[in-house]
Image 1 (spheres, rainbow, N blue to C red):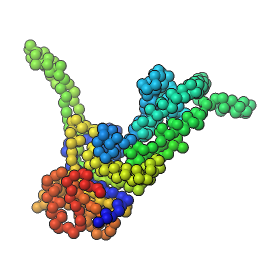
Image 2: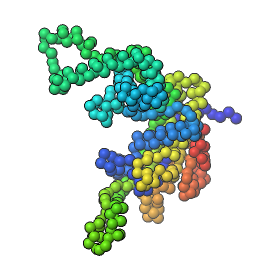
Image 3: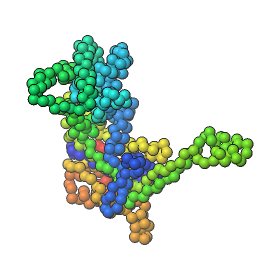
Image 4: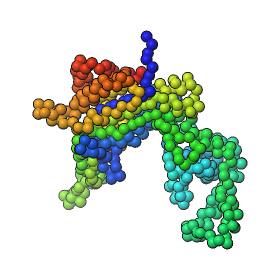
Length: 450
């Protein structure tokens, strides 16, 4: 029997219960929240989730694990000049100072702005994060070394004019002056001399080729936006992600902690009299940290058509692009289920959490089921008119919502569910008997998608 063609969108939904964690914080170190259904909910931002998923898939690919083993991946950083300089040093024998100066000049001349050269911490960092294939630095370094003398001559002129411009600005007190009418013509004639020489086209093209998305799978999946360089392609991501939020009202705990000073306690234990002991009383350090608990709903979508278009635009052949879409989907689903933001991971063991339920299905458009939880879950006992524990209650709501929508949207198909919670497994069996909607339970992440 021929399998039906796959739909454009794969919708993923997760319910996960987290206890005493802090996976994402605001500028004050407090948990993030939103108001939904008239009550405050805890929130884990999509940015935190997407980075965790992207890095998870990248690390697996680089380690030779999973469907994307050995595939090209991207790196998002401000340190491309330093990475290029390191390659010039290690692979081509350049001196450190010259390598950094040359790499910065070449990358800056393409259009990326750098930090203040007077501040060592940011002088060689781009002002924006650049998401580019991980071998970008080595490719730029190889081109620089291949055309070393030409680019050294260009670099010297470029840096010299930059220095002259900075000195003139410093002499004017850092202010731009408005020329009088008699000096306008003279200023216009000298304008070309005051501008650093542009990077010759073939070298510019080589740098643009190095930073282009090429076959980096995670760039094709998550996209990138680079406004600083007009002729460098942006990529519309194939993955859509929502913020995760608690299905019940938010409850926050401000946990007081006291950290011991080992040296002080050692002196206290070995003190010869109580006065010496009293001098070393008290904790070495105290403070508060906010912790959150709850059952979270989160959602993501993979646009298979967009992913294929991104890979083809990067130069991949049709057959290879089609195979890569399937492999990338497997890793995306794996990362969606397995990855978790690493904030406070050592003190809360948050990264060991497993979803209570994963629901995956195909459709001709994305489907977000956040509306199922607009009314917060009432965790009061069922006998008292409540819904009981939030985890099982949220699963029932999600499955009922999906069954209701499926009866009205014929494009929905291939619905599959996975759980790691025995109580939820019992709920699934109850639902399977009571519902006419086909939702297939599976036992492994790989079975969530065709």
